Structures are given as structure tokens and as C-alpha cells.
Length: 263
Image (cartoon, rainbow, N blue to C red):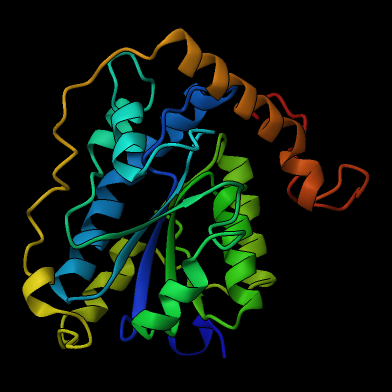
């Protein structure tokens, strides 16, 4: 069974928002921000649709090498004054009923409690949105498919540093992982008659307009020590990102971006 057989349905599904809370302070971050800003409104509509149906919304976020930080601290870091990703993070703040996991690597499944959480919630299928489409979203989608989850990765819900890289990632997730890549604006109208889920605590999920209590904390500049630690973490991830899963020696890998003028 895969997401394309019948069209992805929301029943017993969860929405996984990957790395949209982000400082974007890395090489290529400016280009990724440019590509990611247009998808934010579509993700918000999908997130609100999940909340309205009492379905789980899960934020899967890099910890940016901040091993003493919880999610509230990560949010504060990404929204601090001068952060490149603050505008992106501000548009997608979690609510008190949302779930979160902090991931040490690219995939939301790798060395995180995500599998346990999905099992406890009784989740049978996953919708994936976020950044970067050809990195963390892609790796998460492949891990989800390996674990037997039908997946929906809407084309208007992910972004990569370039449109070409994003198209390649969508093609892989569709062809290799069997993902439904139907756009959010095309899929949501089909859900109008879907009944609200009663598998979750209704009183909690009715509070869809309440932000996490730590989201409104004042922003502060990043300290030199914090910046040094973050840069070291980003350098390590950059060195390993492509070679770890898609070796550069593979001449047919669609995930090694072509050296073209428009790219």
C-alpha cells in the first residue's frame, strides 16, 4: 500500500513539520529562505486543517548542536534578533497541543523517539512538509517508507535551495518511496467531509490558537560561544550531508545537483 493507491487520507495520520523552525545560518541558507518563504502559507493551512480535525501535528527539528536545549530554547535561538530564519520561524510557531522531537541528524527517525511516538498515537500514515526537500525531508520520507508508512509529501509543502533540487527530491520520493506529491491546495478540498478524530484528547486539540508559552519570549543576540558551537555543528553536517546517504561517486544519483547556470 502507498499514498498513491487511493489518494492520501487524513484518518489516523500525523503531520510532520521538518526543520521549519530554523536559524538558516549556514551556507546556502539565504537561497533556502528565498525558496521556503512561499511554502509557509500552504503549510500553515495544512497544519490548521490537522488541528481542526484533532489530528497530531509534530515538529521535527534539528537541535543545531545545542545539546542542553529543549524545544523552547531552540525556538528562542531561531527567533533571536538578527537570525536569518526568524521570519520563517515566526510564521510557524507551535501551539501547546503540538508535539515535537529534536533530531541530532538529518532524518526525523534517526536516534529520536519518533517511531515510539507514532506508535503511541496510533498513526498509520504520515504527511511530511518542511525543509530542505532534498535533504532532511527526503531522508525522513525514505525512513518512513522503510517503516511501512504511506506518505504524502505535497509539492507545495517542501522547499530546497533551488527549484531543480526540489523537483529531483519530489521525483525520488514519488518513484522510490511511493509518496503522494499532490499539492496541498488540491488535496485539502477533498477532506471537507472528513470527520473529526476522537482518538486524541479533544479538549487539548481545541486550543489551536494558543501558542507554546515560550514562543513569546524576548529575542536576544547570539553569544560568541553559541555562534562558535553552531558553526562547528553546521560544518560537520555540511561535510557529511550528501556523501552519507547519496555517495558523490554515484553518477546516476538524482540528488547531486547539476552544475548548470540556472542552478
